[in-house]
Length: 289
Image 1: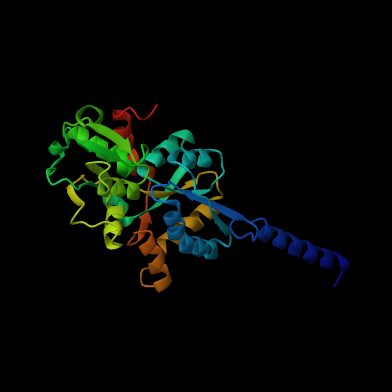
Image 2 (image 1 turned 60 degrees about the vertical axis):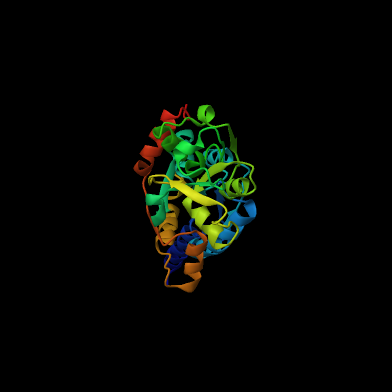
């Protein structure tokens, strides 16, 4: 073989190696930075994410790093400042992220359950049997930026003719859904609201006795949680992440564990238009500038 042919072969080999090493999806030293709104205790969020993180590592070839944050606003800001790549958001937090990032935040998947999500109004007071009975009572929401723990329940309360700050004895914010249930169970508030998924989990885990703390009203359905990526990520990585969620199969035991921890029967594609109703509710409540 002539020397020039050898050079051409060597050059082709070098270019092929370079093409592999620069791929952001499969680079061994690449890190996928993930976070989530703190709608439950930090230890619970870590527990829920651990097997999902390992699954995403296997699917992408990247190291997956989960970083908890102190409040909802921190997740939005971390997406906007490129400190995280992928985030578990509520519907309202997604709307905030979309606005803050000038629509560079892209929702890719949601649980099937998130297309028909609801919030549960709970109480331990036998005198409270309907939303109208909340007048003059103390009430606890979750976090102020929570879709299912504050925004949408407030929207439906207003539709029922109730203005919390005017009609309730006092209004508090617990910061998280499980904390709301604890507030009501301990008598720190006469009633409260949390999302249906966390309520079901607390009952299943026997952390709440439904004979003592009961659901007395449920909201109409709305779109809620999703996994959102930064829109400036490599398109191949966004595609790979989307496929990884959509391919989770409940027939496989390891993947069933992931779905169970996420309170999901399966993941389905989502799109930004699904959250237009939440954005309109937030504007009506004066929560968007």
